[in-house]
Image 1 (tube, rainbow, N blue to C red):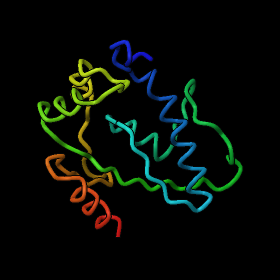
Image 2 (cartoon, helix red, strand yellow):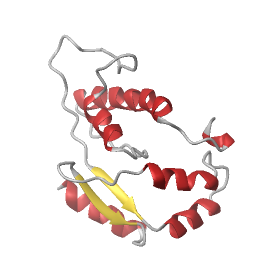
Image 3 (cartoon, one colour):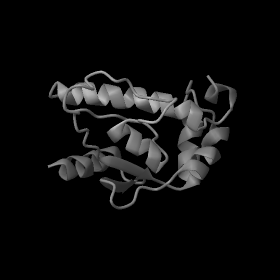
Image 4 (cartoon, rainbow, N blue to C red):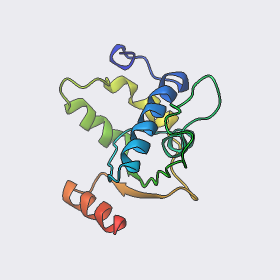
Length: 141
């Protein structure tokens, strides 16, 4: 709702949502599923939360299964890169999307590009969709 109003999200807004995503990933991985999650985990700490959850109060991921051995969430970050102009142009062509184009700069400002030792690949959005998918699938082999 904040983004629809043109207000950029902050850590306090994002962390509970990321914790919920971590809990969903953990549950699905524990049940033997392979999961694809698409989200803008812009900061390294956000990606860490997706993998490990968040242990410090007051924002905790749920404690289900705490007494059992924790399920390891392996994460391959697919970092889609592109110039501000290209991404802005695509955003402007979207219809009925929750994020107004005016917030794009805040996304670029917040972005911490993945780096070692994170498990990631970087793909330029100039490629067509089939090339992007092929690159991801080859990496997952």
